[in-house]
Length: 529
Image (tube, rainbow, N blue to C red; front, side, top):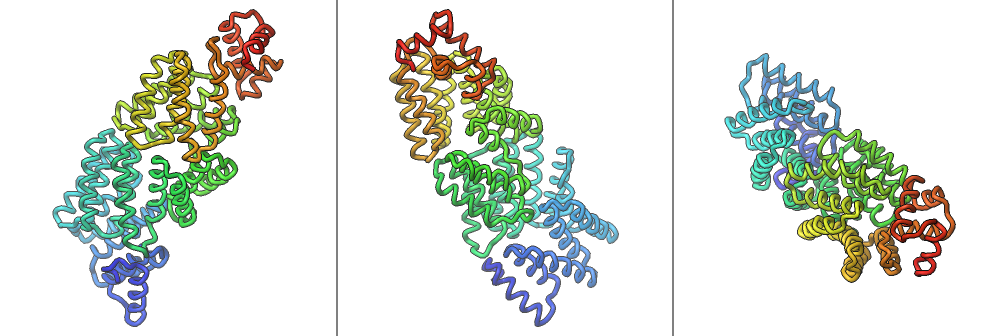
């Protein structure tokens, strides 16, 4: 059963054999492995510790060190660094005392890299571990150590070298040359590394391979939940939202809080899909669950507040999130949301530094996904600055990139911006076509909030005149005609009073009228309200 990868059955058979006659330590390791892959974590830990003692009792120190490695690795992955460090120190001391030259030293070197802040030192340790694995012909160690090299290179900004190493690692994994636990760890780590470098092509390819690997082992418990999270993210990007929701729900249900770091990611992913579909109450609950499971819901929670019209709360949240984000991955995911929220408050000045940072990251990573995000954000800011012609160039570039990535929702959002830009340029026919295409996409996806906003924009566009008012200015003019003060306008449109006053001044200048009363009369006369 072990060779057939039927892990629950293998565990049952080995446990039964152990009850009849105590297993040898080598077989206890097999029992512990089957238990781990069947989701019996406590049983796996107990059998590993027992095997460790039995190896020591017969003087097999390298065998005991291998058990200590597996025990420490499990603890490190669960965030129990003190206990994991204890097992690592024990194994290192036992090998040093006996001056053992063995492959287990390479495994222990990789453990030392957990939490290693010096990336150059981490790369050097992983390189030594790779050499040890090659010397002893241990393909599992070689794959594990090369993964460590690639992760260090990513941290050092050498993404091209890292990608080459990751591909090499995955060749050995897909060729079934690596032990099952290391295989699962490598799959998940490689996909996470691809996400960190926004290498969508590789992330998709290896997620599909992980899915096949999991489905070939129906009794496999670990990795399945994390696999579902990755699948949900890719389904979301490609517009298969019902399937993405189902995968996220399965992941959230199967992952216990504290037992798997993917538990928080599963709840967050479900919350993101609920937010996009307009299920705001459900999204609120999922984001809170993500927080309880150890993952801050960013930027989803800030975007939820924006969708709910709580713009002050959205601004406060996204600013705090960005201030606290030190790593490039997190900042890259936050910057587009920051730009969107600042522009919703008509604060293009605050959005510009974020656009500059995002554009710089796109240049460094040279990843199509980040280029698409950066061009979209840059175009949106240019549009807010009244530079519609320049904005169109970047927005068309962004739309093309999203199309090539097969990302219909993101492409439709860009088409809404293009519609606004064409209106500002006086090309109302092209504007209407872009907006109609976006509305259709939102409807097909089930993106209810975006569909409603597109409907609103279509109504505004239909009543827009040659006065040259933007969509936001027309909203303000409608409230001016209703007798609202600047403070009341700000409250209703979720703007500051100062921003509302600035809009009123722009309206008076564009209409060529001296007062709010005259502007209201103009609006009534020309059918704008």
